[in-house]
Image (tube, rainbow, N blue to C red; front, side):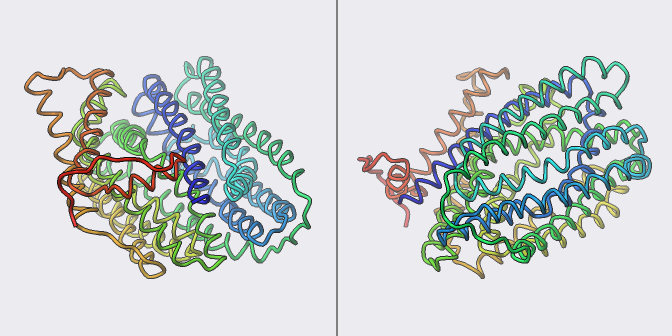
Length: 520
């Protein structure tokens, strides 16, 4: 139970930080959209696609490697200073190599990949941040491994503040000169925030390592490469294919008849506006997935297969319940989210359609973390490469003919394809038990009925129907509360589930009311 409390506490800290950062991030994205427009956001998203590929190569799988090696060292009672020094040197080398490559190829990427030569300057600015991103990833892996995420979360929040401050200061001077300079202002903020974050993490790590007095474990590059190379190979190949896919999307839309500005606007609508909103509640799952890696890796090193199976069953079940309820809320109130967040109803249709994918996307996040914690990163690599390769082919074939309808189909195919193979692999290496009635079908019914009832109350006038912030918050809270009550009433959440959660939170025993009906 002590480990469960540590996992819960770490998840809670990371979730609070992630929610705060995503709230600020979405609000800042709204501010940027109002100034750059959907076309400018689309161009910036394409620049980020190229940059993220360089980040994948530069980080070199070092975050996962540092996490796993530090966990194994901790399990053996050894100091990890030599391990971390080796990981930082490796990260510095890969980060500098990726940064130099991006700097040299910025003109080629801007002219031939993005079809906008003006994007070369933002890419060059971003290339300077890659060594700091890679070394920060190594330190991030260390703090995750030792389950000391509070300080790291504070650094992430400060990093966001620095980024916004620099972007706002630069935007006022540079945006009047054109979209190119507006994007450059944003990339300058990213560079400044990455440098700041790295400096803070170095200070925290130097404070942390003084606490150790045990013998240091010798760093073995082969051990890091065993973990990092499959991860970077898989993520690098997928990132390359994903970059190609995203660069082909505006081109395919133009071939379907859209103008250049219209294609960028449509791309920015989905990837710059819809997905940030849909993924906002996933902060709790991304935090949990990151912490599951050291948790499962440590138990695997100790041969605790029964405990691993128990963790997987509970996490997968609770992820299903959470994601189904979230999907129902997004589907029912898509127009409200679009109007309140972005001040327009343009996102509502695609937000409603893509909300159906929320359970698949959210569950895939936790499954990915579980597989990496169980040393199955090679399997993740294979599935990601297959998925991305098929998506590139589908984008090339379908978008010129079907436009955005074809792209929506590709998104559904991609998520379902990856999720199926990942879950199948998890079932082979561990035990995944799902009660179809209590964990899937009943939550689906509750996830549909709860927000539908609130929509009905709004339509008959019992609740206010005009969308504003207060109305949306009220509708979401009422739907979430009714969803939980329905889950409790129909047996998808049991008394033992509530007691276990209470004990994990440190509240001890709880006296809970009996429900009249219990399933299974």
